Picture 1 (cartoon, rainbow, N blue to C red):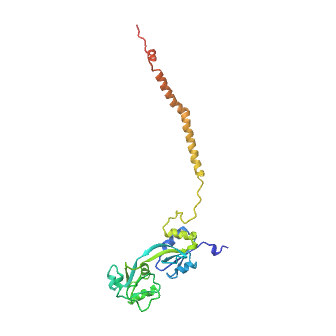
Picture 2: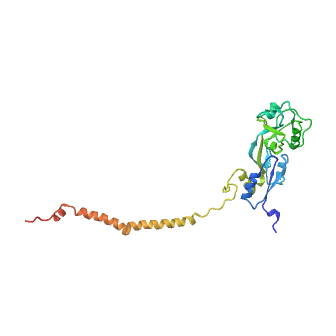
Picture 3: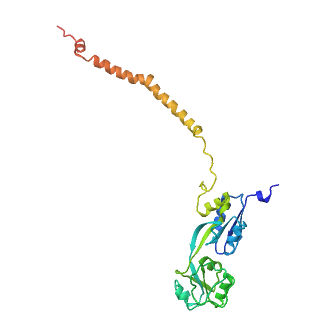
Length: 269
């Protein structure tokens, strides 16, 4: 019986807000015999999950521990402020950090933004999670600044969001344990980078076929062609061409003055 350790599989961790559906679909099309399992993790625990080998790779938010992990940045998210729909900021196209100065801005414990100085006024307590913070925004306690994907993830009909161009941005990356860059990890790297199914990067190369096997038929075809060309120059077709040439010489040799006299008819007396 084949043990589970011998069965190929791939575990992909992902943090809230990241949507790996497109890449998972491509994986299933290209490697139908290798099941991909999604492992949901918080942004804070993602690095520990990868270091502990509880996932083969992860879609995480930067920064990560680069002493043990490799990372390929994939994209940068827009940062937005989540506000009630009846808030004055819902009437504008975008909001600056300065515009938040008079409002309470919630700072959840799982915040993913790297602020040098947080905008607005702090709340009395920090919410445990972003989801809790969204509930407080709906209750009118304060506002929340998050990556746009998290605002979409926790969407409510009574809330909306607006871009904050001068706020820190969140970067999403593919990360894995540096010492375990396996063939399956390379396969997933190729997928997220948009490589086609025919790309050889990250895959074992198929040995090239010896050229002699393919060259022999062509060579066999070329050799008779060369023989026929020789035959034409030495055989009957060539003889015809040579006959014309010798006939031309004969005509020229018989076209002199003496030949003209022999060919002239005598006059009758």
